[in-house]
Image (tube, rainbow, N blue to C red):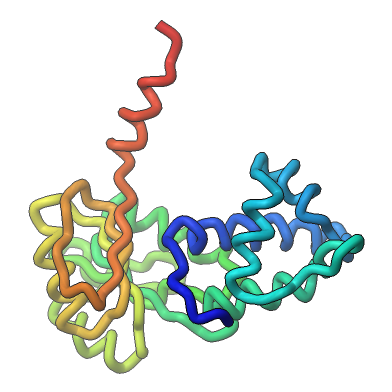
Length: 207
């Protein structure tokens, strides 16, 4: 792998490539060109080639990419070749939906623990998960080697939860609360703000 800084934009495109390549694999398609990838994904083929070239030379001129080989390489790049455990805080409607979606995940990234501060939710079962009290967060993260946290709590509670995750040793957080999370730079935070996305979509509506 080249020792260059990889932009966030490149990293965020890799799962898109992986998802489409997996579809090709399921269709028993063995090879694919960057032109075909670009057409299907509505992307510039040169951009696809450039993105992949950051990590190595995976294609063959005149042939394209071996689908299974490229799937394996992208999974390795994204560290999906190892088991990655995830914890979620906030067993409300969104949190429950994410835990339910967990059943359909085929990759090695799984939500293995769910927590909530509300006494009424403690002990509830969400598929194969039992809602735990926040007091058990640190111990559970240590015991289960959990590396990623998901926040689905109200905005005013999110910073506190984020700090608890950080103090417990998680390395990255996906935040669904509409609030800015400030943590040490070594902890990666991605924000999924539904409100902002919906409001920005409104700009494109016909008047």
